[in-house]
Length: 118
Image (tube, rainbow, N blue to C red):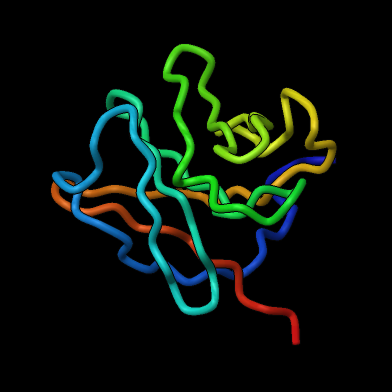
């Protein structure tokens, strides 16, 4: 079986920030429609993760980013999440948080927001 036949879910490309607004090693919250998203820049790579800790519903964008481990930490209870896949890498969180696909051009960061299946 070929992966080429797999269908990708439909998504809308929405501008989130300019590249200049994304500060290296810090998280910034953006609200896109009903999604709260933390945008994190580490060097030239941009990550987008749901801005809500799965442990206790606190904003992840208010917590520290570890550029070497590529994680973000919930400021309230210390749970850390991988920016690559949204999986928790430390307790007390045990459930992952959503990540979003990112595209950039020379000046802007875009988030691909999945179309709802309603």
